[in-house]
Length: 254
Image (cartoon, rainbow, N blue to C red; front, side, top):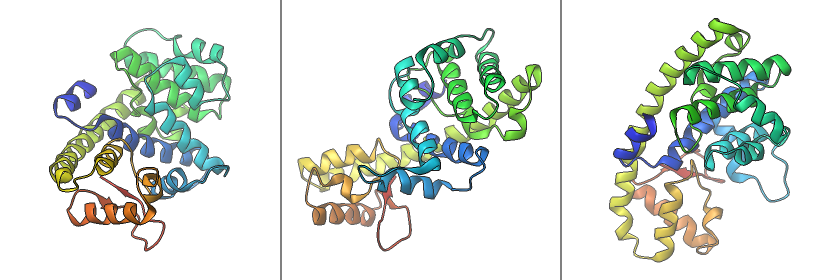
């Protein structure tokens, strides 16, 4: 339902999933006992240099980003959760029965019964099962955003009801986000012809697929100065936003 609705409205699907993944990552970080908010996780993802370690919170953010980026498969799930074997993923991912939410709840319960602190794996696999049951091509972070720790301690019908409740809220929030991103994407497309360069057109497509971009990410397309100038011009045209409020290490996105 969600993918069909936002596809018909021309919402930028990859960006939509990336923004949802950031919210799910923030929730998983809280479940791990840490306090990094979405803005800090965005910094880690966008400003991490080659060879640097992202730290525990950054690893959680990267796991959700990877899970939501590629088409759903056992390989993509193992890439997001490298600590799990393909056999573990297969057993958990296909072990449920009943409707989509019931299957997701059963997988979450199975993972946490085997490893009570494995909240990240439980929620990613729960959302993977949900997506597969609905026939979606990609994992959409929904349960991962709205299942608090106290409800992950539930079992059986109580957990299934908690998953239903979380999904209702997540769908409402996700559709509102899709509507907002569609409006912003239309604005970006409308100003794109004013940029008049092939490199700028590629940059526009990057903005439509990523939660946020540092100007340095555009350097393979243009010089550092040109990248910063492009980002500032898009802000001036009302097509993108500067997301940090900082004077340095700025990040831009819809």
